[in-house]
Image (tube, rainbow, N blue to C red):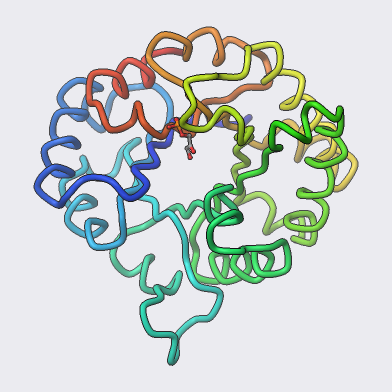
Length: 253
Ligand code: 13P
C-alpha cells in the first residue's frame, strides 16, 4: 500500500546555517529516524543539499530531495545540476514540474518528460507536480487541464518507472497565497488523479501512488486535508521553513 509523505520545499530560502538549524529543530520535534509516521523529505536549495543531508537522521524516515534537475547526465551546461550529481550527494527525491519552474523557467511537458527520465536513470524518485491556475478553475477546466498535464508529462513512463513517482497536486491559486484548497476541493482532484492513473496503468498502480497536496497547507489545516481518503500527505512551502509548523504537519495524520 502507499506511503504517507510530507515534503518541505524550501524554494529559494534559507542560508546554510539557517538550514542546518531548521533540520536540527525539526528532528528534535518530529522524532528520530526510528519513529513511526510519514516519510519526510526536505528539499533545500542545491548548495545546502549535502550538508543538510548529513545533518538528517540516517537510515529512517527522513530523506533528502532536490527542487529540480537538468535533463542531461553531464556536459557543458553551465550553472546546471544533473540528477546523477544530486544522487551522489545523498538525494533520494527530486521535485519536477513545479508550477514556478513551469511559469518562470518555461519548463514544458516535453522538457519535463526528459527530466523525469534523467531522474529515474539516476535512481531518484520524482515528485511530479500538477495544478491549475485560477483562470482554469473558474473556466471549469480543471480536470481537463490536470489530465493533459498527466498525459503529456508523466504517463509516458513504463509501469516500472511510474512506481517510483509521487504526484503533488498544487493548485497555482493556492501557492503562497494563504488561500488553501478546501479539503473537498483537494479530495475531488486527488480522486480524479487516481482515476487517471488507473486508466493509464492499472488499479493497483492507482492504489499504490502517493498523491500529495500543496498550496498554503499549514499546521492548522493539515489534519483536515490529510484526513481525505486520497490525500496522502503534503508538499509544503512556507510552513516547511518553520520547525514547529512543519513538525505539526508531520504529526497531522
Ligand atoms: P506554500 O505552501 O508556500 O503555499 O507553497 C506550496 C508549494 O509550492 C510547495 O511546493
